[in-house]
Length: 441
Image 1 (cartoon, rainbow, N blue to C red):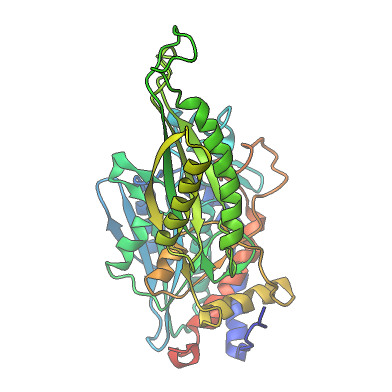
Image 2 (tube, rainbow, N blue to C red):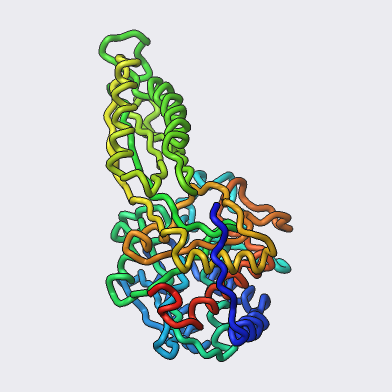
């Protein structure tokens, strides 16, 4: 791990940072997070929350621009211009939630609807609960708070501050809403006037990442014949698709573990997980299904193309056929996004690390390897140097019961966010108060 590049603040920047940092308000952040969480915004249906955020931007002194993508979907971009001598810095977060927030989530989301799975907000002390409260709405509220503090401090900014919040940031695809998802919103923004020199995406965990993985979605179809429960086993006319699928699942799990080890590099550990199995009719259990489908997501390093991952998986399937000749399978890759990387020596990465070191009080170490995918990969692929900064997550010590695992990503302990906002604010001062030439532009 190379040491972080030193670039001291001028006395004017030191004073500006202290002034803006004093403007950060945890109470205001908590209320805004509650308000945003209380507006339901599943992928492809973000218009209401985008309009709310646009009004809040206007109220704090940002110039908002709504970017509709349909009757119920929208992105929003806010701007605070500097003197024109500096860079444009984008603070970015997705604004959509990964679950629907209705009965269609269950039983797949868990045994019951905890507070962090509900599409409405609850506040208990310094905790805010609700679908997407932590991811992504804590990021939206957090970046709004950073921008508000900068504007209230009335600083002599050379650069321009942008805030961008987009639909489609969740790794999902929603056919009934124009196939929303897979970073479609950030692509829309970048094609319609959002043109930053640098970007910071706020996303868990408490590190600075210069790169993020892409993802590949695969589906295996284990084939048999349509059967009937009233006939004996052993008939030549019937071949189960369900029982052989168990063998395929176990072999696939081994391959996914091996794949992650073979393809890890840089800051990326590209895990894969089997997401589900489906087949047959629950209302016709007397008729075993002629096909059982297995579907999964595998993460893709920036140094591995989706085509290469497809080739690796094809080799696995060919080997499976040799070892288990009686299992009849086909497969397809039905979704893919490549990873993205920024040179770790780039200004915005080094600036974010300086902010991390300033708040943590120690040299920046090598971060834990990353498997989580965000719109940051798309920003980097489209030519925007991007740093990812986060906070410790998931939060611990919740006074309310929350879903096991990642659940609804909807439990936020607001004090956990504040050090992250101070780091981002540091990078904002560092970037927006210097002329372009100092930033390598």
